[in-house]
Image (spheres, one colour):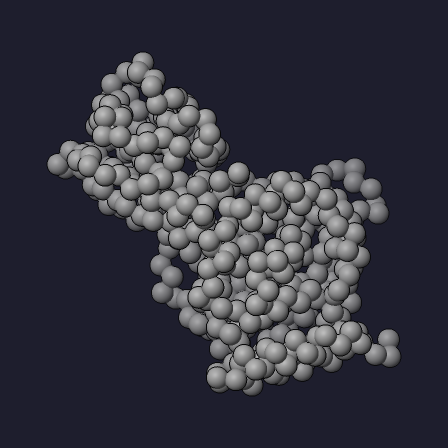
Length: 418
């Protein structure tokens, strides 16, 4: 099991109660102890990019000097007994933080001046309870750290010497032109996107819009009704103020090119959607198997976003999952959103574990774009017209069935006369 949700939960705890504390910042080197039996999550990997000395110990280790550790983390594979917690408190510095993941802590009372922060994860099969005991100066509350500290690194360089046959895209319509068409036909009242970069796609919105990107490089000023949250999407949905979010009519997801991030982005966005929303996920079609690897090996790189197609088809058959033949790397249109559906949330770790460990080869059907719909097909306009007309009515469910009937006719997916 990859324990992706557990690693994310630890990041939330650290950004809420450790990384945001002034006394833990550089030049201080964070002293971290991870207590576990070796069967739990690889918590040490979370500290990438932070100046920290991280050690893993078994619960019965007793050779740690008192008052020398800044942060102690007890993994979900360790029963958090009052005896163990009391012993771990003794090795913490005066301003230390004790983080306990797994089941709720019962019966242990920390120092009188300590602050206890209890948070229950909204996803993953375990729905972990994360309890942070903050002592001394760490008991002071500060806003969560929303910088790129603890952000998962993803290869973002262009490897040299890649054969020419790898470096190409495909498709019948530029993905940005497809997005322009979507705005024209959907006429969203609120638009969101993950991955703003230069702002080229955000500017298409004529309505109030919100972009999410930790380091955008905007080429021009945004309109007054547009805003950008300077955070990763994970931090935005779990730590930032989401009151700027409204009910979404159109959403564009173009964030991290690994399946766990794309799926989380979809899940989080769906919570703000309705049955008539349109969600677009970019980069679903590598034009060469090498482009679809999790670790970047070419300039054209989709990562393993393509896995979201079989995941949604298998676990969310209630959705309309429509791969669109856009250039250069395809777009996935998803209709029939249901913010009350918990299937992906309840099974997140299992789904991602299967995707990473078992979906290792890019299928030929993905490279060949089997089952795609031409972005220029007339049926696209018909679908979007139905969505816009019915999205505020009780007949949306009926309309979704009508769309399914249209899509069941293969000839309607093509462009005639070309």
